[in-house]
Amino acid sequence: MKAGFYQFNPLFGKKEQNLKQILSAVKDAAMDLLVLPEFFATGYQFISRDEVAELSEQIPDGDTTRCLSELSRQKSCYVVAGLPERDKDGFYNSAVLTGPEGFIGVYRKTHLFFEEKLYFEPGDTGFRVWETKVGRIGVMICFDWFFPESMRTLALLGADIVAHPSNLVLPYCPRAMPIRCLENRVYAVTANRTGKENRKIGRRLNYIGQSLIVSPEGKVLAKAPKNKEALSVIDIDPLTARNKSLNPLTDLFEDRRPGMYRIIKR
Ligand code: ACM
Image 1: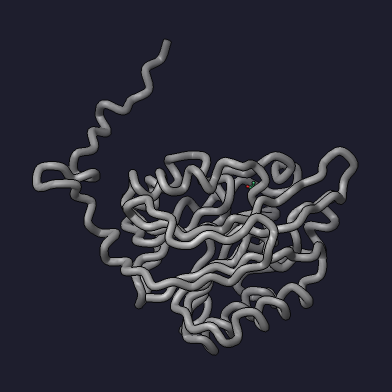
Image 2: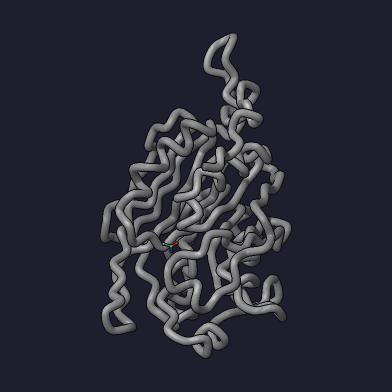
């Protein structure tokens, strides 16, 4: 299957313009899975709840999810992309999965980062994996990567590919993803953004780009530059992620010993 990401510099509050840019960038690309960044259509740095209220949408009935479903239908591909979700209980940092058949599901970010905590509720969906025609797709959002439990949970739920919409500002993730993939024997597609946002005094955010696709052996198969728009699509074989065996006597999942992993309280 062909899996890819589109890395770019979303303009804050310019949903239509950002969506237009994506549609134009992917128009001629053939792919089975496209991953877009966290908050890809709105921008990231919210500075009030009013802004979140104005730019967030219901899922699946909002315009952005409809547009992604239409893109999936037209290109006959799956899309994973992040957006602020409005629900009766509050706002969530969410990602949707759409496919040729339309909207498939939503994941709400478990581990909120920094000032996201001022505006969003901690995600309550739990980690999710969807069986699709091209493999089992699991989703986590940006800072979730810092908690090894996120990818471990997705891998134990059967994910072949972890789709990872991101707006990374810390430098570590591109170094960490090869290890996350190696220890879980899964593919990961991290779609990050570029550029900077400086919407609040003393809170400038510089996004690190470097979107990447990593194999179950921890090999970096594709990597974008730090500060350039990039569409990258490569061939992967998701079924190889189902083999957790290192040799005839060692299976990374069967050899786990959860009973030994209890927390020792001092
Ligand atoms: C992040 O979770 N957006 C750093």
